[in-house]
Amino acid sequence: MIVGVVNQKGGAGKTTIALNLAAALAELGRRVMLADADPQQTAQDWAAIRESPPTFQVIGMSKPVLHRDLPKLASNYDHIIIDCAPRNYEVARSAIGAADLVLIPVQPSGADFWASRETVKLVQEIYSFKETQKSVFLVSRRIGRTALGQGINDALAEFALPILKAGTTQRIIYAEALTEGTTVIESQPKGAAAAEIRAIATEIQGIMAA
Ligand SMILES: Nc1ncnc2c1ncn2[C@@H]1O[C@H](COP(=O)(O)OP(=O)(O)O)[C@@H](O)[C@H]1O
Ligand SMILES: [Mg+2]
Image (cartoon, rainbow, N blue to C red; front, side, top):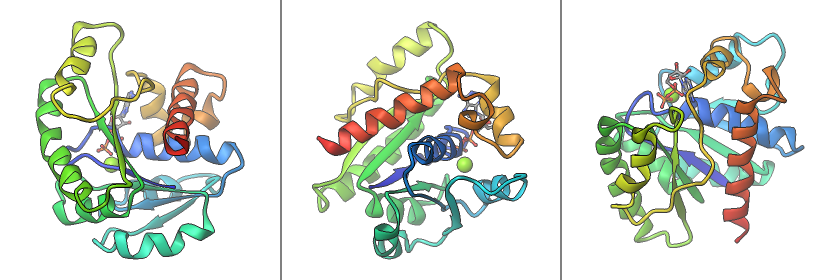
């Protein structure tokens, strides 16, 4: 299964979700590769500052050749996760073209919601010739039970894409883990953030098995 974590907006939570999801799948004993498609190389920097190697492979692939190269690597892994670059149409297109499942993280704010329109348009364009592909929204950095957090589901209903039940909430541990070269799965395996990420992993595995 190739999962593309895509949103043309920076700060949507792509890298956070990609790294933690990779760790959650690796924890289940799966062979996981993370393709870092962002020329800013955040995931590769994250891997470089670690004390021990990650539980999954991190490989830089920031050229728009993901749709061509990743399927060839797919037999070596159970899951490949693409951490996509923001504001890069060609790479986003290539990542969506490679993906069996496109995960679109959206923060519950107007600016983020409007910016996701472009990404959805791209997904729907590619879907027209790749009908086996699935795509879902993931609400990222939800803040408690605020009206903003509730409203995002209504706002996203405009698009004909499902919304994952699982998502992330705003928690400092996500930012800390990223900065320290770790994941919430490793730093607080029994914590609430780890539970959120495992729920995302379980839900997307269910979608792909359906
Ligand atoms: N659920 C969360 N709670 C708190 N901080 C978060 C959360 N998700 C992401 N962040 C922080 O927000 C910033 C942007 O997230 P990042 O995953 O790098 O987004 P993107 O890859 O889409 O640009 C990072 O500093 C990250 O640590
Ligand atoms: Mg990123």
